[in-house]
Amino acid sequence: MRNLTDKVTFRHGATISTRTAQSPMLTNSGLDEKITQDTVDYYNMRSQSAGMVIVEYTSVSPNGGPSRSWAPNREQLAIYNDNFVPGFKKIAEGLKKMEIRQFFS
Image (cartoon, rainbow, N blue to C red):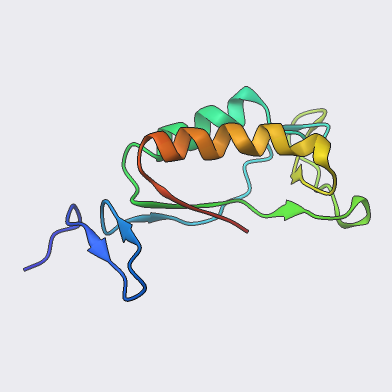
């Protein structure tokens, strides 16, 4: 029998460390559409158990978002220009350190 903690290798060669995946869920942790330390911490916590993480949906155009949140200035993330790249790089580096496959939706 296979366990949730078993590694999985896909046909194209990619391997994930467990059979679990973090599905994309909107965290509304952005501040002025940029990734905050709360966002980075959220994904770092998920990387401790999931073999694959699909990062939440993100605005690719200033006209496409942001969705507003429960708190002032907390909103959906964006990546419609290079100003947003450093935050996504922090998430990617944290997941890579834990050897987690990552997908940005």
